[in-house]
Image (cartoon, rainbow, N blue to C red; front, side):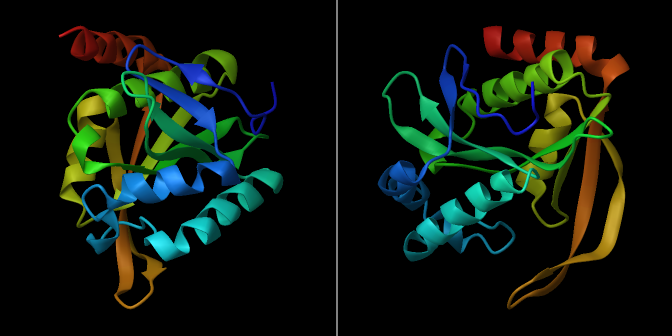
Length: 195
């Protein structure tokens, strides 16, 4: 399977669907749940910029570097956010999971954990990746804690790594899960979801 081939991944609580322009209005509603664009250390688009962000993600998919998804709640059918495989390196069979955001009402509900489980399962078991990476802003403590709770290990901090418009350079914290750790991480995530 090609790394950027659109696929739908279905879990108990959520479904990951290929992103399309038709998701625009639902994504604006999801981002408005908590006014997520006001968090300076994230890159959730403002409502008026959502179409540009959707087009950017789809353009990166056409270039072979991203595979973007929307997150749909199975209980209500509502779109609750976005996530991606990004920085795809098909030659070395590596992906990063990132560009993720969830409506405030779905945070800490298990939906994000299940989405990560589905993405990691696809990466390790279908795409046969030897490693999966996560990156986040040093100041995004909520994201850092969530990534660590998945079972990812911190690899390091890339200092002065990425320019954030209007703010300056961000320090990027890099985490990863490697294939020999996958069975334990998978068991851990299933245990968390079963609780």
